[in-house]
Amino acid sequence: MEIIKRTEGLTAGDMYKMTKGSEVRKLTDAKGEVLNIRHYILYQDSNPETGEITTVLSIMADNGGLYATNSKTFIRNFNDIQEMFANAGEPAPTSYKVNSARSKNGREYLVCDLA
Image (cartoon, rainbow, N blue to C red):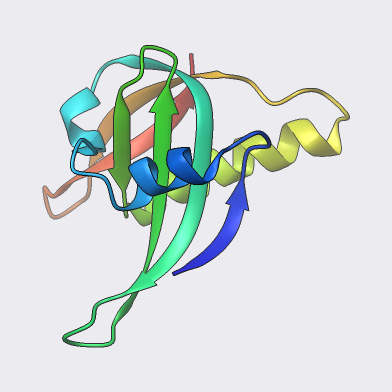
């Protein structure tokens, strides 16, 4: 596992819970909800059977809920928001809405929006 980016103040225990813990839910379970994010970690992990590398965003909400996604669109949106605020010299927002959209083929995918 390779950590790409994370919030400050994460303990080793938090990182384990967010990356390997059994309580992590799919982010699709929070579709339509606003998540107040306490911590996040963006990491890459490889499948031991296939060797395929996957980028995952794991979130710890203020209520203690743990969510993870490998949705490229959601991760790109989240990173774009983080970068825009950093470039403006503003603190990153902590509230994000988990939305979904449909592709031209009718496939549903996750979208990250500011709450």
